[in-house]
Structure formats: structure tokens, C-alpha cells
Image 1 (cartoon, rainbow, N blue to C red):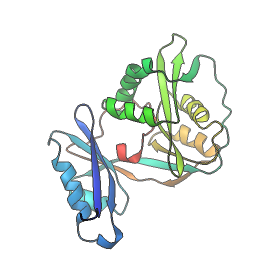
Image 2 (cartoon, one colour; image 1 turned 120 degrees about the horizontal axis):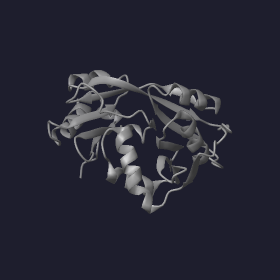
Image 3 (cartoon, rainbow, N blue to C red; image 1 turned 180 degrees about the vertical axis):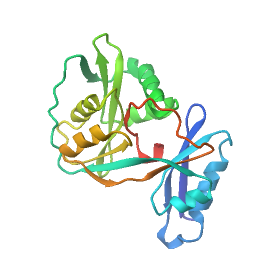
Image 4 (spheres, one colour; image 1 turned 90 degrees about the vertical axis):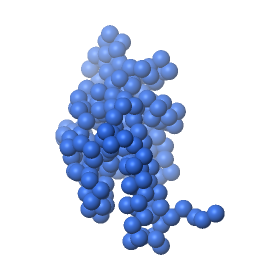
Length: 236
């Protein structure tokens, strides 16, 4: 059996959006067009009516432009080696609780409005993988936000986070990283300047600002501005 020298993955969501990621080419085989071939295979595997998004490196951007992708936004990658608690005041109009299975439908609806498509299977899998999954309830008991942390080989990955405002998002982050000893990572969408300022006060450092690119559409799917941290770059 031959060895794998190139890969890419496509993740279709529930309706008309998919995300491409996991672009890997063995160093010995670079320059042969294998990355382009793997990406094209992913594109060909879904309907032409499906909008396909990806988060690119600057080096990969020309390749994806040649495949018909356009830059529509950017994401902000932050790392942290020594987290400092924000110690923000909870106004007591919300409670932050551990997730229970009964919460899943509300979480899916919140995520759909924030992300731009339903992704039930992805969320169920990420919740099962999570170190912590938290929900935010208002005084009426309705879930208005949630957040996950995933323990990876290098970093504790924070996301997705959906919240009505940056203050609530920061409270979720504070709870997710409580007592964690080690490196942290979070990827934040554009137009979250207040949240990014809070992250920087907590010791996060922005290390890159990669472009979000999309094919079969000229715009990002509609989002309600409550997506405060993405799941991971592979998932858009």
C-alpha cells in the first residue's frame, strides 16, 4: 500500500454550506499540484449550489483564488501561554452552567443563527470531545449563549463561543479555562474589537490574521454577529 502524501477534507453542513480544511502535503512532494488536486476533489464532491468556505494561509491564497474562491473576511488567531483572569463582574441577569443533553436543540439553533447554517452532527461530535461545555441562561431560563473547550495535543482550543455580547463571551472563556495549566488558543471573527481587547488584557497574543475565502457565493452566509469564537479553522 502506498503512503499518503496529500490530504484535504470537506465538511458539509445541514443545508447549503460546506467547509474545507486539513490541507496537508508531504514536504517531499510539494510543488507537484497535489494540494490543488485534493482540494478540487473536495469541491467536486458537493453540489454546485453549495457555498464552500475555507480559511487560508497567505501562501495558499493564490491557489484558492485560481480555484474560484474569493476573500470575504478574516479571522484573528490568538495564543496564550499564561492566562490572566478577566475578573469581570457578572450582573446576575445570567447564569453559566454545565451543558446537559436537554440543551442540544437550543444550542443548535443559537449556533445556526450565529454561524449561518445548521451543523447538528458537528456540534454533537465536538460536545462529546469537549473538556468543558457551558451554557448561559437568562433570568427566564432560556439559553442565550454557549461555549466549548477542546483539549488538543498542544493547546486548549476555545470555541465555538456564541454570546449576545463581548462581556458574556469573556465570562464564558474565563470559566472554560478555569484551573487549566497550559497553552490556550482561540480564533475570533472580525468585528469583535471589544472581545479582542479583553483577550489581550488576559494575556492572549494575536499571531496571525488569515483570510476567510468562499466559492459559489460572493458573500459570507448571514450571521447575527453573536459568533465570538469559531470552532476551528478547518470548520470555518
